[in-house]
Length: 253
Image 1 (cartoon, helix red, strand yellow):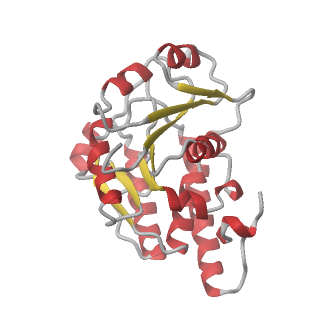
Image 2: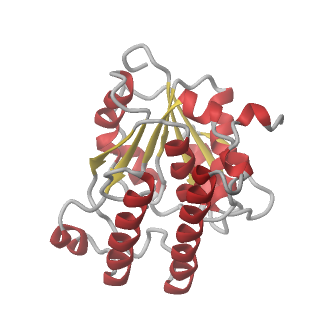
């Protein structure tokens, strides 16, 4: 428990056998009630290692995609009674030591969603290993998304996220993509429903064992982000309605 709230960490995993244990070792002691790892049909020993480490594990019978993995994670976290849900990738790219600080913004009712910003300075980000083309595309997309969504976030594309339970209960994330664009769709939905989003600095870590998408998939992802912003503007203008922005209760599941 943290300030009387049940904290559940969810780990969307794929081929994380080399980094899972290191990630777990850096999680601060005594603040997390449960860790749930959902394995998206890894080709390595991720699930065996997770079970040996005592994690609650769920396995997809086939590879379903990053977004689909998150859908399973969030469903299980809500089922487990989580008040606050922390998404932490098990690839060691995001420093778990910031978790208590991120949670504090939720428990004090300052924010409903917290994102870890990897871009505090250009030098620090590039020294942390982020490829130059990813840095440039991140700066462009983040600036554009901030303008469209009326936010002031440092990094729209970070995989470290913390959610208040209510956010996951209202947003119908099952309408989202099963691929990487899931994250951008979720943030657009959170803004649409009026949730307060904030960010905290988190170190940048890029290395050979960590997961990352290549240039071709990054290009596809970038165009996907622009498409999400287009849908958001059309929805806000009232010209077109998208199921993406309908409350979960209106789409009975």
